[in-house]
Length: 419
Ligand code: ATP
Ligand code: MG
Image 1: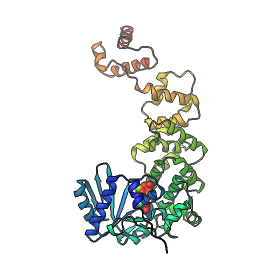
Image 2: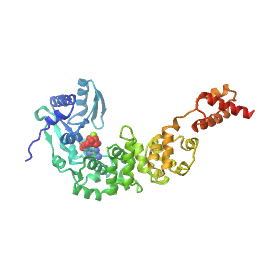
Image 3: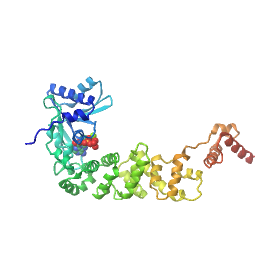
Image 4: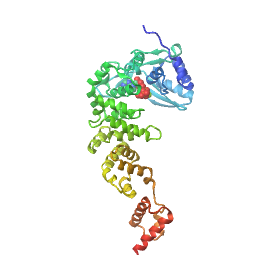
């Protein structure tokens, strides 16, 4: 028999005191209501690993919304509920806690969303992805802190293994393939051999997953600290090719992702920048296919299209003697993410330098004089105003004038030439 493990002291030492008293109060209320409450999923895994994780996921054998209402009223927190699944979120202070009713899931067909029904904790753990994510901790006063580990999650943590719970796991939900790679690379673990075999067997199930769900998974990958590790592994296992056969998780991409982090003040580049780098080597047709496969939202899609368009202009951008106003006219209107990606990814140092110049300086330069100023100087309202402003803008970009007075002198000169 397995010896009982109690995580009360890990909880006390690793979680903020406010969250600990919240969980104790929640356990007390649940017990009073005759329900059983558990801490589950990633936070249990990270407690055992000694890694900070304050995203509490609670599961109740009973009624999550009822319990959440009580908890929201004692913390004076905000509550959001989803009656269909009987789940709720309580937000107070800077914390956000998910409460779910323990549930049983079945899959009508591979790739479909599950059909759910209320169930026991055991049912709820059985529907989970990996053993290391399928542990729970009791929160009711009687057994507070006790670890529930039906699938050997603790051993797998020790042996650094990512293991699914049953042979149909990836057929039920192939997004777990991506999740598995993410945990494997994040934690420096390995896919357990049987799991790896089933991953290979079931890889075509990825074709049954909707674009939205694949995009969500890919976004989670790109929010990891080192997404390139996951993408390389995904390339190696032919998982990345299932997103699009032209995507490559190789040394080039690794290098570019590192540079992207160095170029980003926070050290975590936005998803759009990583995605543009990942897609950089695709043709414009392939880029289009990727945008529709992932059903990218408008802005992300535009970033990829912009990047592809900038790539088609690398040659003129690299031409010797290109003036600042020339650079401006090529690059105006593109998103910052696309420009940043292009500067990092282009294989022409001259083009990269010009894109950098545009990003750091040229794009911020504007004439001081306005259309109103020009009319006061005697230029008739109409298209001429736009033309003069454009010429003026070019002159400023090229350093020919650099103050309001010089701008006025230049315009006056043009007016005299025309009379
Ligand atoms: P992370 O640190 O990445 O947030 P997490 O374990 O908290 O890890 P979540 O995506 O927040 O992961 O999901 C919470 C829990 O829900 C997981 O630990 C896992 O037990 C379960 N889960 C999430 N997605 C799936 C899935 N596709 N299939 C099965 N179980 C899942
Ligand atoms: Mg989580």
